[in-house]
View 1 (cartoon, rainbow, N blue to C red):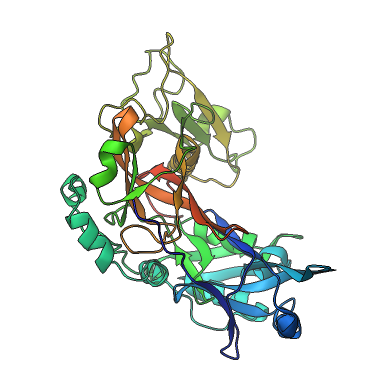
View 2: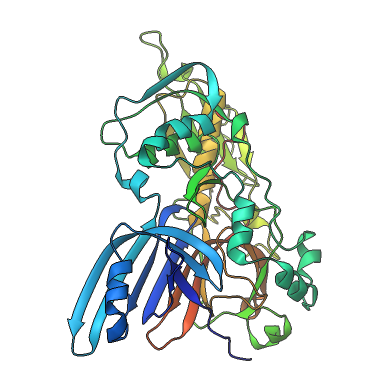
Length: 439
């Protein structure tokens, strides 16, 4: 196997200049973490110390690129300078432009109540304008993915040559075809800010009703996104010598495939708030439940008469089901309920939505694959990118399945070696949206 050529990682500044000489660096990105981070150390030549010190100022906006492809636009959050016999060393920590919204409090007197519903996009603009976010909100996560990856032609060519025909397996084309999100269709009427609540937390309450998350795109714009499970794979991850001709990336030692029943339930039952009538009985409260697909509960278990939504279980759709199961028990009963109450839930529909989301969001911990690969750019020619799909082949377990990239950590060691650590989930494991729409 030929050794990969190191990718060029550089930090660019507003004046068009850039720096790319590092002792080491770590770039972290997670779909469920809005901030991410880029940390690096550099020991420049004596003649360039003042240049580094001047450019790397706390609060400065910088762009991060891999082989010329934008990955993130971040703020320098912290700077440390160490002076010793080996020279002057700079340690820099960068965070997403969302840091301001994440750490800064929202005006507690913000109380938006409209006579008719307005779009989320308009509501967000009102909140973020005072924090300096004046550009349009990016609602095209698919385009952001393509910008980060650097195009998909190389990925498609490699997959077409693969011995394992990924296109046939998924009946999809490699690369994301994510349609832009239409925020004008997503409405709300009333939200009240809380004392001490961050601006990001306030906005998240708007997005969570529609299964959306707020990120920053590669160019520093606000980005509205959601998991994309409908795209085809752009990479192949493989373990084992027989897989060497498949045309993907070999996983390094330390592969971890985990499957757990912790925080997984046979059903989630959600009750709504108290009736406006004093003394209303609990039996009259609105309620609903979500149950795992295919689970057979014993007759006589509680709540069987309540309306239920059967949650499709993508974790079961593997070659033989050994690993893909959201919840399973071989005991006399598989009954393991989670019962919640939401005082603001007014009807059965809202209870059903919340029950489905609780079960869907817990899916991210049910089964995870953690692995590392050599390099930052994959064998298919694209930068490893969150919210994309890789086909996973683990020879020793006879495991073959497409999986969704939840997190990545890109590193360069002081010795110059580059690696990418990945966390992947089965397709559909993480569900954020309300199946019947927000209230």
